[in-house]
Length: 408
Image (cartoon, rainbow, N blue to C red; front, top):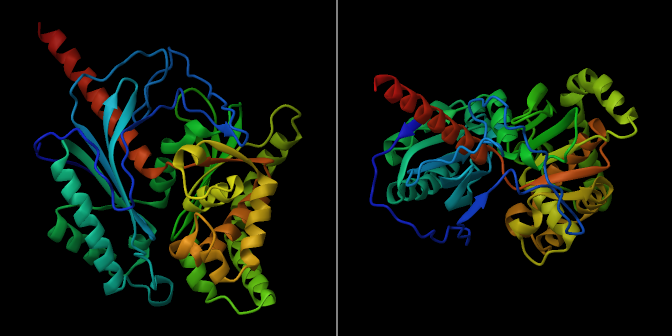
């Protein structure tokens, strides 16, 4: 549920976030297209101006519906199994301008696979991060926010009690969304980076506690969801279920194979359902399989593919990478000892133990939808929430304007 917030004093300058980032940039679906690994950019197909807008659609080129000047900010909080993320933005023309962002690894789902409960330490970490978010909401000119929690809170026996604690201590009311809503928001937030083309494509989101695979049909505006599947395997849940990695290369290879088996078994029914569509698209000479991923796994592997000395969102968001390269990097990481992975740029200590599970999930997805190329998105649920809020606000403005005209 979206929460109206009291308007505090307006502040214009984006401040440094806990992760060292300060952003004041526009996310423009009509101008930011998928980028090839050689630096070229592919523009996404523009929707025709006559397309009827739907709730949550970003205004498309040709609609010429600028947002009113001075509109207050909107905010989205995504509390996942591994991360707590905040995005604050203001409408800007047909897009939105990000004025503040925050991200912190909280590992809310740590130990959940063994106990079925959120641990006290994990809840404390999450509440501390949400206090930072609440402070930013108060200090920014935010009048409408939506805050969501995903798989960890869906599964935990004490998830409801944790939600109540968050509201009591921070004032943030978390909405525990369904896996279906999680998939919808991820698609809404990143679909503009799917390679241009007609017909079906696949979008996936590898989270901390679950992974969503969504078969979409491209068209004007937001693509239609044809089929979807969520499985309870994310980088945290899969890592904890398979236990600590062994000291030898052989033991690490066996653990990686078990991870892939678990994910493959969970997606088996979905893979059978979409097989006719996959085979039909793969057989078309001019309609290759299109695949887009939004997750820390794909952005990390894309960074390694580019050999970046440190993570750079501008280089990664919208990148198109050969699937063979992503497979090769995944298999290499799966055989490395954790101390070796910690030394790699863009992985470090926080991701070293979890990245192998992400690799196993990614390889399974490439088995199910064997595209030659993989699109990479550093955007997802938060951006989907913002587009929903801004779209709803825009629809409300038009309705109020119509009422005023009728009263004249």
